[in-house]
Length: 398
Image 1: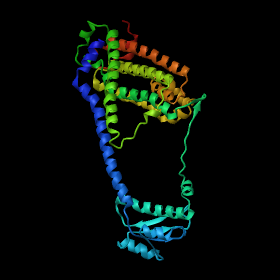
Image 2 (image 1 turned 30 degrees about the vertical axis):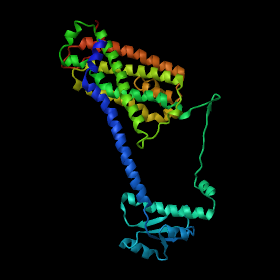
Image 3 (image 1 turned 90 degrees about the vertical axis):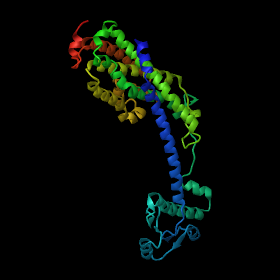
Image 4 (image 1 turned 120 degrees about the horizontal axis):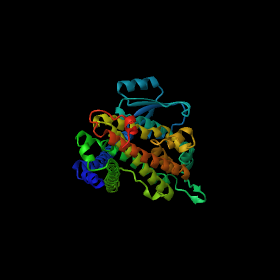
């Protein structure tokens, strides 16, 4: 059964097209966005640095006249006349520096130069004020310090050893990304795993040659194997595309040298990923077994999808206050446990004993759900037009 399902799935061209389309499209989008940002960034920089003439008044007394003249400014004693010239198009801008720029705004009135071009007015007004203040201070070092340009270097230690910080969070957090991709990419396939036989009206023929337990277990194992293949195929072109393009395009470097692999977190993350994926696979298969058609089963996938995103409503508490009641509830509720536990494990606030409890809970519930799925399929395998009555199916003996 496992070999048949895996072979049948992998032999379908649409399976490979669907997998490869996602990373290829993401790579193309990243390249286009990078090129567009590069072009727009150059245009924006050119617009911001474009020289223009302006009149100004300085109630603060901070503006250096020589610097203002170099920037294209001319002092004026008649703000009303300057404003009238701006409105008539005779002057590009009028800048009024207040008496106290720390508490009052610098008022700029200028000819409209477009969304991007208008940025040059703010840039010039601010730069002129900063340059004048720096000239008055007379020390580049004091100017940088006054402007808050102070670099810091942070090193943290955990139990006497240097900790990796965010570098230790990213690797186990990839398990969470993998979990989401597996559920979102394979969810419908899981839900429809048993519906194909129903819709083709061949269920009774299948059950004459194979036991329902073997059928469902084989499909679950096959789905899990296909999910692993899908992740590997998905990751390979994405990684190759990044390595090939990030030096030529404006794609940020991931800084892999700063990553740290914590063996305990990585092992716990792998176990939680496997157990969580197994539970959702078994649940979706069971729900599909109870439905007569794929159309009836479709809304159920939406419900399961909502469950995996619910923990993100409390993500701040998951990271900063793992002992909060809502976080504990999400940690132990089976269908929010995989995401919550993977998050907590990545940030290092999931104790080993809690990871063990969650893992045991997921394993036990997966086994129970599989038994329920078998019973539902056995009882309702030929219910082609109506949903299976769960109470009757679970109460009926073999």
